[in-house]
Figure (cartoon, rainbow, N blue to C red):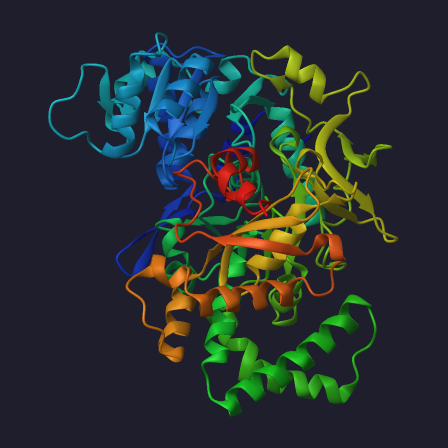
Length: 597
């Protein structure tokens, strides 16, 4: 590795790039820059403040915040003080905050807003090790004595406690195999486990990732996935710092569509849901346009897909097709690119399966979406497609230096310097996850295609086994259903039964539009979701989306739920994956009612 620790990497890059933009944040109608040297000075100051106030090498420090420049500042300062960052999701509840801070024995917690501060203050009683709470925004009104503003840590007087504040990590004696972070997995089942990742884990993953997909100092990456999630932390933060790119923060995950044309990024890191929503909105607009526009769009995309197929096959493109494609770009695809800022050279998709139809659409439109695969325990990226060989429908080949093999039962195993040190205070779970030969058992089922690219089938624990002995991967069916413009979410059920059922959450905007067109008279959304015409519509849409699947993969019955599954309600993980066990238990009576005669 080029660097021993993450702070060494950051300060080296800051020395190199100096006054260039490192971070950007939006205020009003434009983005404002923070230079590398400005950030480095503040990181050194906050690190010195942490050391002055008793944070010692190896201590755990909580970080509860939305994506903003202070997140980067705090993380780098914690690491520079030789401590271990314990990130928390900004939508975590007070009990979840208490559990993580108590389990990690955090001595200090940095948080962003009054809302986040309230959670930490409420959690403190159950966290005996927690001595201080530092808030980025100045705390309003009277606060407990242990609550301080960020400026309190940045006091220049603290520098006397550290001889060379810009090299706190070196002074603390931290090395590549020391823990850098404990990341509590969002988990689709059970209590979250604390994944211990070292400086080597992160840096090895960053270097392997950049060898596969280079990042340049001319790049701008829009950051909106929670930095508490390892995908954004490694790829959207550490890899961008390593490559010298600029990180622009979206104001929130809900403003990405508005921030894209202002930030004008060249890189995007996202879960599939963003691409699904953009795709659905485009098709909605096309369906509502006049016949001429619909014909132009359909014809243009046919040409774009032919060009894509030739490029993916590394086949020369005929002259007449090149001419047609230039016309298509002007009439069709340039509008999409402009909606996404106009400068995107590539987008990464991870965290959940990307529907191949959506992957093909964006790639045909001139926005390469590269799907990858990983998990928190692997820091996280294991495989990813490449710009020069993007096999849509797969998650690409392994990164350089990362071993991947398929076990006899189909489970994906990986071994590399990126594999976690273990689960914090949980040796039993660690021994279960990592075998004696160092192979991490991912819990995912997959296979390699003829080109050496990994294809994910499903979660090992998620497989549904019908009473007829058929193995069904529910995610494949759910992803297909969610592609329909009338369906927002779907959960498939049927373990031990002789047919599959589903819980369907419709797209209410689409249903309301349908009701207006069909002149349906309903009192409210709940009545709309149960209207016979709507149920018939959804039946037809479900059958259409699953038409080419086997009989045992079809949905025989379904129920419609008006309210969406949410992270806050505990039904989804922060990366919007279904907490299957939780949903099955919560709605068991509803699911089982579909098997009553």
